[in-house]
Length: 113
Image (cartoon, rainbow, N blue to C red; front, side):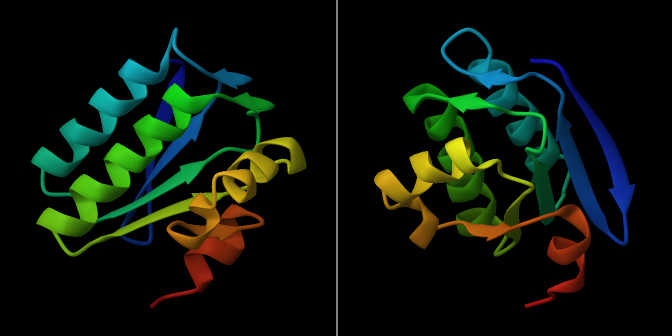
């Protein structure tokens, strides 16, 4: 998985740099989330503005990160910058009802719950 990590306003921001999240790289993303959670991170934003395609294994990696963070830490797992074709996968699978999804990183960081 090609991704960068930065801290902004107390959030760990994972910038996914690949155009695809699929069976070939989703395990790396899942491991990254687990490491962050084990290190005590309670607020994670996943920046998906470069991602053009996501399959079921990619959705599974994001769902795993969400589940692990919210169940163990009562934290926030946020998605930001989804392109329409990626957003439509969340809508098709109804995962848009589970995830906090914002149009961009700025909006995600401004919406404190």
